[in-house]
Each structure stands twice: as C-alpha cells, then as structure tokens.
Length: 458
Image (cartoon, rainbow, N blue to C red; front, side, top):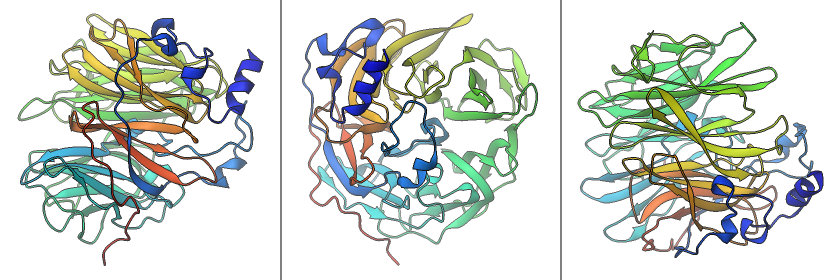
C-alpha cells in the first residue's frame, strides 16, 4: 500500500485512465466505465493563482516536500460561494470570479448570445496575497449590477460594485464590510445583499446591506468558536433554496480542533438565519451550539465539506470528503441526502488526498452530477459522476481531462448554469503558470481569444 501511494505521488502526469489504484463509483474503476462524448475544456485565463513556496514550511504527512500548488481555492469552497453566476438580462452572460497570480480579485464573462469571451481583468487589489481565504465571491442584483466581496483572512474584508449593470470594465471604489473577517458566502434576497462569514472573534454569522454594499449591518451570529469538549471551531457554509419571497437557508458544517476534523452536521432556516431547525423540523434556536444540528457523518473525518446543492423539490444534497490521519491516507468523496427520518450517505469514489476537492451540479429532482479531481495529492484529472436516485447509487460518466501536465483542482459550478458552461477549475503547480479552464456538456463553448488578465481600470 505504501508503495502504491509513493508511486502515485511521484508520477506527475498520471491519470486515472492509466491506473487501477483508485476505484471509482461504488468500487468501479472509472477506466472500465463506458465511453461518453467529452467536450473539450476551454482555457479562459492565464497567470492565475498558484500557491508559492511560502507553504513549503508546512510539513505534510506523506507528501514530498517539493510538491506544491493547490490551484484555485484550497480552503473549503463551501465557505467561499458562489464564484460564478449566469445572469440573463439585457445580455445572457456567465460571470466568473477568480484570483490572479497574487490572489487579487479578477473576473471574466462569457456571452452566450454572441458566443464570445470578454478579456479577463483584475478588478481591485487585496492586502491578502498568496492566500486563498480572500478569494472573491459574486452576487448580481435584479438590475444586473455585479457585487464582489474579497480580500480577507482575519483582516479587512471589502465589497465592490460594478459602475454599470452587466459590465466588468469599471468598478466603484471598494467599501469595508468588516474590519476583521474571513471567507464569504454572498447572495441577494430581493434588493438586500447578504453575506455569511467569520468575524475576528471566531463567530460565524450574517450581515446585510440595503444600499448596494456601501454600508453593512452588525453581525448576527449563528455559531461561535468553543473550548469544550475541545478547543475548536465551526466551519460552516450556507446555500439558499428557490422559495419566494423568503428562501430557506441550508447550513452544512464540520468541527475543527485537535486532533483534526470532527463530524459533519446540517441545519435549515426558514427565516434567513434568525432561527434554525433540524431536517426533520425539530427546533434548534437562533444560535447553534456544539453537538446540535443533524449529525450527517460522525467520526474523525480528516476531510472537508465541499458543496451544498438544493434540488427543485427543496431537498439538500451534501458533498464532502473523508480520510485517514494523513493527507494521502484512505480518502474518498461521499454524498449525503435526507431520506426522512435519517441521512443516507453514499460513496462516490476514492481520491488521492483530502485536497482533491469536488463540486456538485443539480440536474433535476434527485438528479445530480459530481465533478472530482483525483490522481495526485493536489488534484489530477477531472472526472464526472452521476446519480438519478438522490445519491443512492452513482455511475461514472466521463473523464473531462487527460494527460494534464500539471494538476487540475477545485472545480466550481456556475449558479443558474447553461449546458454550455457549467463548471470551471484551476490548473497549476509550483513553478508553473496557473490557468483557468471552463467546461459545459453541450460542447459549444467558444475559445478564448485573449486569456491574459488586464490590469484594473483606474
């Protein structure tokens, strides 16, 4: 087993199609799955963020010291959401936010009517460079103004708004959301902009702005750092349902503290986070304490939550990874769905390490697609899996990338996605140029004529 792991880590261009080390859905080897047409990924932007040698001071168990480069977001993607939105107004465009080579916020769009990419451009600067905690998140209001929050790791967090609807060339001056904050989940309810983040005290909660992000309310805390039964923290992410006029909020979290990551929990709010309850309707209250909520997965998971998705029936699906004590020990991607009166957890596939972070896309009621990077400790090739029975069974569909010279990782889904552009991901490794790729199952995505990131407009 040790030999297999070392071989896996040492082979920089190995793909799952070349090896049987990593079984696929429900023990299936993806290489043996039936072939499907695979649209080609499109290069969207170059010189994007890749972690530097700064992180080599961290001792990773079982990982060669020369390895680096966790492209795109290496922090939990569930805590920085959404990164991309399709907005249909005067135009029909998908907007994608990402970090440039220093982690400054950048953006690009694809116009579905003209079938053209914009030039990617930096939109502001951050004091939190070489750090994925401050990567940008995006929201679009009903008038088409783009709002981006970025740049914080227990430091000032900023919001910025486009100067005009449905354009990315010019932006209003940034405003401060909070003097100390980390992560950001961002969404509109009506004309009110909401953010879910962690403040400097270790409390997670909501703020809202009713003036387009110029001023923000005080934090309404949902959960806080704790010291019993161990010194630890909540790591939650939030997602919204489609209910009108008040969408339900879905919260999915794990506990972090010695000796590692502990337990996965879920709660739902019918009133924008003022009160929380379990999936079965049992009340929790306005704040969530340690041990409260629905126990989705219990144990020292040494993994991470990766995505919350909500199908058209309002049912949440939870994507997460678990593994052994070491980064490359016995890692797998799991999916949980509520089947009253309990959560059903199923295995999708095995992966090389806990840093292989996937994402999920809703196709219909009980119908999901999952995209997983695997094959190397810091990513690899992207594979697609599908369930049509709410996560009871999974099938490998296709392999999106092959023979990649550097790892692909952290695929992200587009909110309100068109079949033409559904996911995007980062590609890169220490010493190599970072790149951003996009993909859609329709196979009609046009090439990007100019992927070089333009500087921010004055």
